Image (cartoon, rainbow, N blue to C red; front, side, top):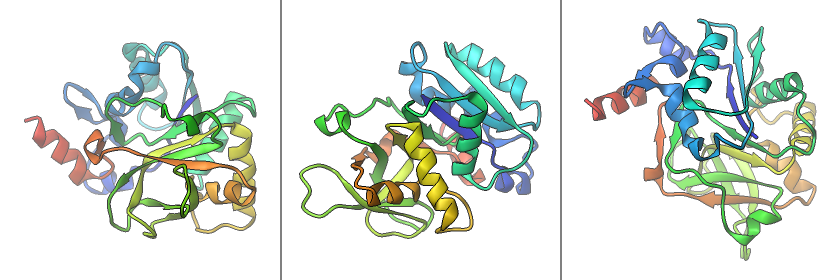
Length: 242
């Protein structure tokens, strides 16, 4: 299942004077939403998609129209009444609202990132992995980070951090869990002893690693990723097409 949490406040766009949530903004004759979700166009026919959003600006009708236009065969929508405590909290509320089974694989992705030609890893490690984070090589204090395991034969994760560089492996916003139950149990433990005021997804992997679960990372080229999460990035993408 592809899970798209989109219950954020779009605060930076609102403060910059944009009247619509960022996922509704026009881009290349369509919308930011269509480009982000279009990252998974190869999965539209046979993979369920779960969208989790708030009741703002006619979002529910927008989602139904966009999913129909994109041709997503199994699009599930959970609408929330209130802001959440962070992306991980949003995902949990969506899973609960949609009645998702504990054994369902989850791939969580940001609504403001575009991933060119996405496919799940074809490496042998993926078949037995308990989860993985997709990363690119970069720097800066605004990413989730992966700390790789030393001398491992596979791309194993030793730990993750949020907004604290510990390597050059920056998360692009794609987080995979082999089982929804693992996501939920890790979130329960994060809530019991939160590492940050907001409930992010990346720190949840630390709880699974502590349990001996095999968490991996998959490196993709930065040119395969387009970020559109702040007004400057959105305007840069628009200008590139002008």
